[in-house]
Image (cartoon, rainbow, N blue to C red):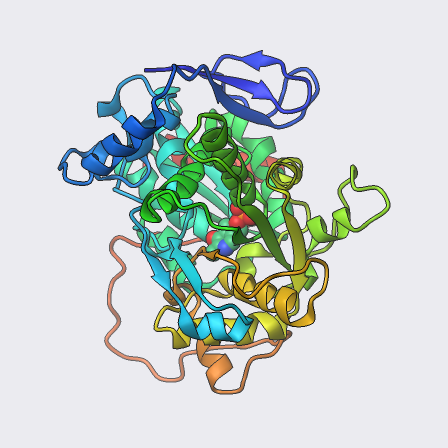
Length: 451
Ligand SMILES: *Cc1c(COP(=O)(O)O)cnc(C)c1O
């Protein structure tokens, strides 16, 4: 059931969905997956989706592929790569509600995915497409969660995964996942933005399929977070949905999801999409509040919320479009606000990683300070928590011990040792300079050794 084509968001040129393409060949802008949707009976489909919850078929069990009528780019449903993913809880968060000044607050926790973040919702569609186009390997630059997710899905699909991570800036939980799942892990001497530039340069030379959120098929999976959220609310549209903003793939895909649901008659109004960035990594906020919001203001990113430590977000134009569609907004919060909000989310018995806590911090700022945009305490708000509390335990313990600093350096060394254990199946990260030729060489060596 392949009804898809790729389409440039700027000039509208169409391309074959099978193309290993991330940008328009005509103008270089980002691509969407667009569909010729058949006439849909929205009420009938809502019913079908609900019934699939009783099925044991993998595509029905997945909280992404259950909604496959909205992502019809696959040829045969038996070829999908599913873990399964999605099926994440929608929880009441009374402590957080009180903290932000709302009468009620719901959180949809994407950290309860198989690898602990919302990246899995997109990785299932991205890796499915990688298999369909016959990719030799898959690759990503990552602040951690994308590499954890891609590592797992690549292994499940029997593909080599290659991850480029910024040295010393990835939370330990996430690095441990990429290594354990067998991804070839290259630690780049540079930041995330450098790693992403390198992966886009290197991947075509080696025939690797890129699974960063510049890949429009990944965003299709993330789009279904909007669908599952509404299904769980029995199709009551919230007034507002709040998300953290890093590379802005999540904001972009939610915007596309809500827009398509609206166009296809599943919902009759749009929620406002509110994007929250960390002050030290707020290029979108700086852009929309600048005199020239049509030109991205890039920054040298700095925040302890490493998942959103991004200064040059790839999907910023799609995020702008999402804010247009939903009458949305973006704001920024401080490191202190993120840290406190995270602890409050913890007291609801929920918890999340630092980047996710920007949402609650941002809501509080909008309500308490009344800045930027007025909010009503009766608003019906859903915040999206993006990553699991166990992803970055170091941050959490430091906060509770009163030892969290916006800048700090730690060194750990073994002081006594005996009874060494062999690392028979070791997958060591490899340190490489931020140099394209060296990286190509390392990956090619690895591929030719067939390991
Ligand atoms: C990737 C990630 C983000 C940022 O999402 P974007 O789609 O890049 O804006 C936020 N939080 C967590 C936990 C993430 O893993």
